[in-house]
Length: 123
Image (cartoon, helix red, strand yellow):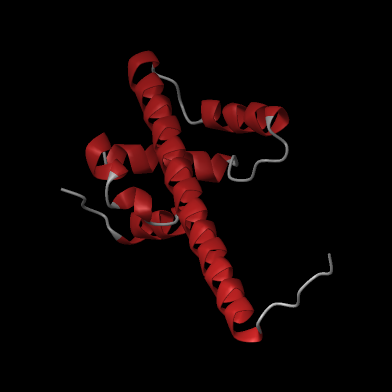
């Protein structure tokens, strides 16, 4: 049994369809990863905020936390003291988890940080 060469038009159509599916899946995967990252950062910020309020921790704990987290997750970006402070500010500015899960988590983290810098009154 020999191999039959595909009809160029039907093959091109198949290739285009598969490429579109792959690209759509890549976009959905990137959006899901972004949403999880934003929710993770919000949760970290909420935890830092709660501990500082409950136990009176100062900002030095953020520096230590950043050091320890970067040591535990050296391949992960975004665990700098500066970014942890943004996480805390993010959780403080947006305490409603439902709101964060819906529209805010759709934005990339960098956009949320920029909003934190620009918007002074979130009420």
